[in-house]
Structures are given as C-alpha cells and as structure tokens.
Length: 212
Image (cartoon, rainbow, N blue to C red; front, side):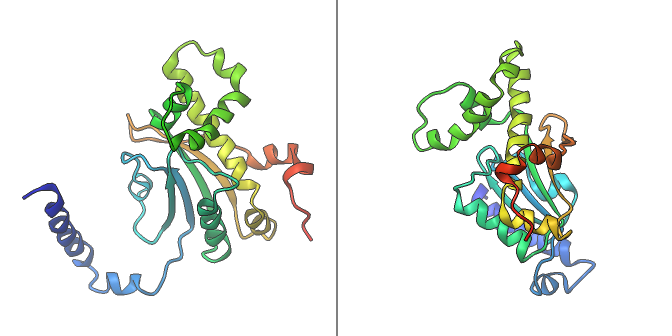
C-alpha cells in the first residue's frame, strides 16, 4: 500500500478510536465549535498545534503560515483573528514560533526565493529592528534562535494592533496575547512570558484605539 492510500486506512482507524468510548463523538462535532484558543503558528510539518498542546479537535482554532507571520495587510490572517475573537470568542491568542525554522533561516541568508521574497521581508524587518542585538550574537544557531523569539514578539504586537483584539480585551472577553516557541528538538513549549500590554502601552498614541 502506498503512502496516499495509507491515509484512508489511518482515517478509519482514527474514527474507530474516537468513537470507541463515545458513539456520538462526530455527531457532537456537528453542533459547532467553541475553542478557547486561537493558535497562530508556522506551516512547518513538525509543529502540529493540537498535539503539542495536548488538546482535542474543537479546542483550538488554528492559522498557520510560513514563519508564523501576522501581517497587517494579509486579509487571511486578519480575517482569522477577527472571526476567532468576534464570533468564536476565544479567550487566548497564541503566536507560536519554533526553533530551526526554515523561514527564519532564509530571511537571515537572503537569496531569490521568488514569491517568498515579499513574505520573508516581514522577518527581515524584524531582523533590522533588532539588528544590534542579533549582530552581537556570534554563534549562528543562537542568533537564529533569538530571531525566532524576537519574531514571535513582533507578531504578538501585530496581533495587539487589531481593532477586534483591542475591543475584546477592553470588554474583558479576551484574556491576552501570548508568545510561545516550540523546540522541535525536545518537544517543549517555551512561554516567552511577553508582557504585550506593557509593550503596546509604550506606543499607545500610535496603536491603541479609543475605548469609545
């Protein structure tokens, strides 16, 4: 059996496992979703959101793209954020990067990657903003890891710029925006403990909307 056909066998097994103790498992899924988390992560195949969080289907609303970028002009990610906050009423928004990220490495070693050039420029901008700190790190792998972390911080700030996010936060419906890094070498989720409110407050006149 080839890899493609194996998928359907895997699916049958998965269905059996899910319904073994609860025959109504999938019927219950039909009624809708009420996830507490919006997970914004990298498209990397080594970072399966539900699995690393230990949560089941229906508990995490997920958006993934190359290098977990939250672009202010990307209607895809902005629509996901607005839908998650205004309609699903998620309580937590997580931006999760990961060490050994191909997008981060590509942005640190510029080359012509076609359509990816414009996308990776978002990371290059993070590199530029934090250039002095990164340039002081002589070990290349450690420098890449630090850029992964700084990229997460900057993308969390981009999430906080969203009008929908700010409105939900002011109303007390959203508990916060959190930055994580997943270590693909150990399986550990690392909470960067970002105080996004403190960071945003530094730029209140620029980014924070009036509460009325």
